[in-house]
Structure formats: C-alpha cells, structure tokens
Length: 237
Ligand SMILES: [Zn+2]
Image 1 (cartoon, rainbow, N blue to C red):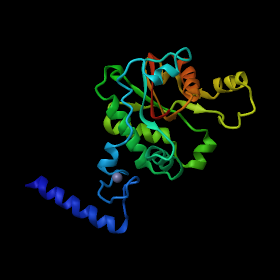
Image 2 (image 1 turned 135 degrees about the vertical axis):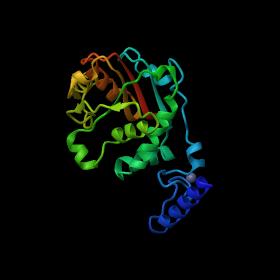
Image 3 (image 1 turned 90 degrees about the vertical axis):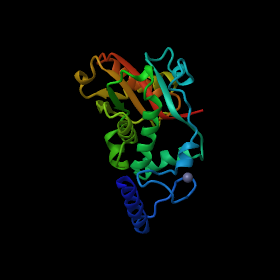
C-alpha cells in the first residue's frame, strides 16, 4: 500500500511542479517524463547506442593504436549532426543543462557496468577546459558527464588532476608537426601522486580525431598510473 501511495504523491507533486516549470522531452516534446531527465523513455531507448565498450579492438580503440597505450576505449552514442545527440551536447555546453550531461554519464555508466574490460577502474579523469573557457561556459561538460557516471557506479571517484593550459583552437595555419608539438603541451598534471598506480578512465564529451585524448593520455602516463582507458559520451562517424 505504501509504495502505491508514495507513487501517487510523487505523481501529483510532479504534475503540480509542471504547472510552474514546464518540463518536456528535448526530442519529441512530450511532457511525460521524469523530472530528473531530459528525454522521455521512448526517446532515451531510441538513442543511437554504439555497444562498443564490450567489443575488443573496436573502432574507437583502433583510433589510438600506435598513438597511446590504452587498456580499453569506447563511446556511448554515435554522434551525427542535427540529431538528438547533438542537442544533448549543445544543452550541456551552451545552456548549462546539467541533466543532459548526467544522462550522457549514466549512459556510459550503464554501458560499462559489469564489463570485465572496465571492472578495475578506480578514478574518472574529466578532460578539462582552460580556466578562461570554464569562466565563459560556467561548467565543464566532461565533469558533469563524470557526475552522471557516478550515479550508476558510485564506487568510482573523480580526480580532476588534468589542467588545460591552452586552447586547441586557431591552429588551422600550422602544419601537422607544429600542431603535434602543440598538442603534446596541451595539459599539465596538478597532482601526480593521486593517480600513480591507479586504473584511470579518461572522460570526454565527443571523440573525433582523438588528438585531445591522446595529448591527455601522454600527460597522464607521466604519473605512472596502472592503466588508462577512455570513455567518450559520443563518437563522430
Ligand atoms: Zn521523447
């Protein structure tokens, strides 16, 4: 009886709040969705999941072959332009919509939960923004995605030990070697001791060429962690 009563009360409370704070699915516009979410159940179910985390030598891992040593890598969703995945990423980056980031994090969390390849993880390392960009944006999307992963895997910890020292933009005029050199000095470590000997899971929002993640990996290896793996919310085909 009690759970029924509780559900009814929760339902009334949600309807009441809805009058003042309209809350609709970002994809289809229905108002039938839980207050902590940004998509309704159907739209969440229909997201373009990759299923890559469970596959050894998957296409995301191949991007990093010969570039940096990784235990495992994958991405939760396929990214395409003008898709709901793009909307979710836009919401978190430019509208400070943390719920969109938490959803992306929960998608990573549920995808890697119970997988042997990811079972030893200790620390989540968010790809940082430069301090200037963080001030402009108000939040770091990778940090919010990490928080979403913790909602599913609460035994993990976030270690924000990477510091971004310059922006990756305005490199178009540089040749490949110059760009490569620039990428190598993109990050610094704040506290190397914290990650030494640990199993790290490096977290980013979108994976395209892998250049940023490669630079972050190279920087992290200086602190001698036990292993490094990568999880991105979305992968651009
Ligand atoms: Zn929907």
